[in-house]
Length: 387
Ligand SMILES: Cc1ncc(COP(=O)(O)O)c(C=O)c1O
Image (cartoon, rainbow, N blue to C red; front, top):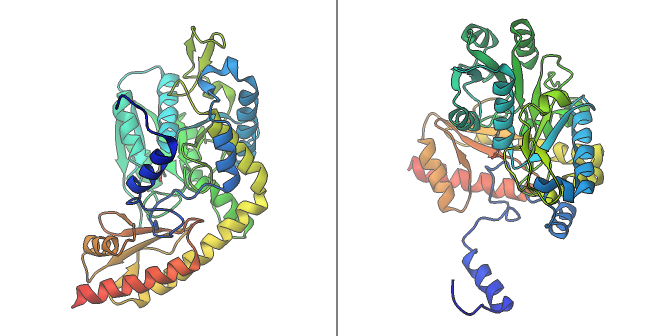
């Protein structure tokens, strides 16, 4: 750090120059991420209430009430107004809290958790942190976990099973009802990772898509991850963890005796945490309402179908599967998919790369003109690689 501070004007200019190389959402060039531009209102609210700290909840009782209201709204959205939980830093913290809760409730050592092969890597991280063994079960030809495989993988050490509603790689939905039957039969904790799908599937249902049960209406579901900073249009960081009831949510309560707001029980992984995130999520949910989100999801799906229709018209390319939500997997028998991703990057398109496909996510910041430009560049890339 230098001795004498710099004037704000110079600093801001320097920052603009230093940050120029970053991709931006408004350019439409980020076409493989599950994040997006926060809603302008969420941005405004977030910056206004930056000083609110929910880690010291005794100082901010009003924000605590807003968090309870937010969780009630999300719980109702996921068929359970009685749900408890928190707005956390993201899907990783939410999934970690779910596994931590399952471990605490089981009161056992040598614990195992059975997850789909498609589960997000945050489950591996969480398992490493919590000393759990992760058992991965393969997928069927629709890229959903094989429920019979989950059942077979259960043994006396199993404490939880996981299903995904909106997989990271393709946006597929696991057979949550079947997993629920298994969880109830075996008396196991069932966590559903709806980090992405939580803000998509209920609106697809309202748009008359055929959506399988994935939320608390399915009786065996113990907890759900739902991330407002993905399709919820909230600022980063805002993930969501919802438990079926308050008892489950309190399993990981930790007493913090010294805070200036008074002794408190924290039930999140982090201590000091953003009240601004909570307030911004509350505001954007209230402002957009079901109608607003439905409209956004409808537009994202229209672009998804357009892309899914146009990709196979490009030589050597096809889609991995018919999209279920606003995610399209692009594969190629003719070309190395990594090379395609690299060439796209040289043309300033940022896509997400998986071992056998490229993932395109049609987030709310992506406009039709971006899709058209992307398709044009993709054709050029293929022409170049094809010689
Ligand atoms: C299904 C799923 N779960 C969890 C996560 C982790 O979320 P975060 O990056 O917010 O921690 C992701 C990230 O993309 C995801 O796709």
